[in-house]
Structures are given as C-alpha cells and as structure tokens.
Image 1 (cartoon, helix red, strand yellow):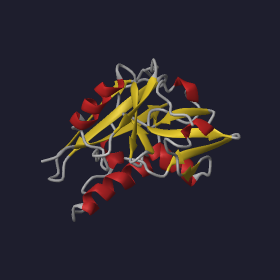
Image 2 (cartoon, one colour):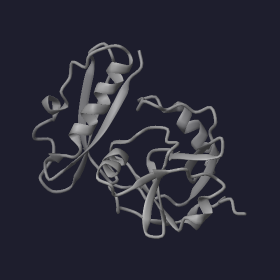
Image 3 (cartoon, helix red, strand yellow):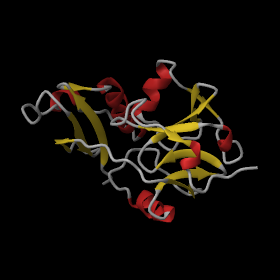
Image 4 (cartoon, one colour):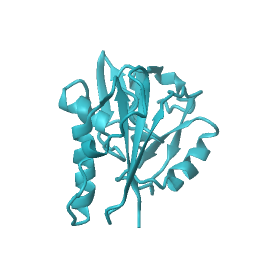
Length: 201
C-alpha cells in the first residue's frame, strides 16, 4: 500500500500551517473514499526539540490507519544551479513517500536542481513549488504537480497569484523562489538566469 507524507515546519515550538497540512491529509483519504482517522495535532511529539531553531516534523501514513512521525533539526540546502527538465509523464498529485520517479528525472538535471515542465508548461522543482517575479509581483504556475501548503497559504493571503508560466514566457520574469512547508516566502531568491538552460526568443 502507498505511503504518504506530510513535512511540517516547527519553529518556536509551533507547527506552521497545521490546518493546511490537515486539509491535505483529509483530501488524500477523501479521494480514495475513506475518512481520515487522524488529527495531526494529536501526534505532535513532545520534548524532541528545543525552543530555538527550525525542525522538520515528518509524518508518514497510509490509508489503512498506519501513522508514524519523527522530528529532526532542519538545515536549508542551497542549490548550486537549476536546469529545466521535461517531465510530461510525471504524476505527483499526492505527496508520496516514494520519490523514485522524481529522483530519476532529477538525474537529468546534471547535478542541478530540476525545474520540471509538462507540455511546455512550468510545474514545480523536484522538492518545492515555484514562484516567479515580474514587475514586483509574484506568480506561481497554474500547472503545478503538487499543491503545496505554502503555495496555498500564499494564494489564500494574496501574496502571490497563479498564472500561465511556460517555456515561452519564462524569460520575462526577473527572479524566482522555491517555496514549500519548510521554505517560506522570502527565504531564498534567485535571478532567472540561474536557470542554466533557460529558453529565450
């Protein structure tokens, strides 16, 4: 049976965006015709982290009722570069523990972090959603693979907008960010030319 995961940011002894993680977990069960028996707040481990620092709370579960969680100190990695990778057949609409398909395509990036596109439409990086800056506004691709909780939060709070972003107009944006539950808005910002195989007219 498939295993699903939620990766939740803990900072100052508070779990970030827990309501959105719960909603996504509920949606997984609902899609498969089941009720979610779990409330994430009941599984938050105690005493495994100090007040200072950032931690990743990783919750692994399946549809039969199995659930396991652990908390680890979190360190943000800085990509050395990005490459566009064609991924027309990739399906990652749920946050599966099995990342074999993602990892296989990641190798096509030649050591860089992969930015996937499908039918010329930009989707996500290999481990985050993406937002792109144009005229001091931030946009996220309509054609995402996985609707991450940080992406949804930023849309809900009107800090970003969704729009068509493709190989044909990607060069019109000045910069971009990776966002996910562990990488909030404003954590890192990259010039669009940091995408090493950027298509231009």
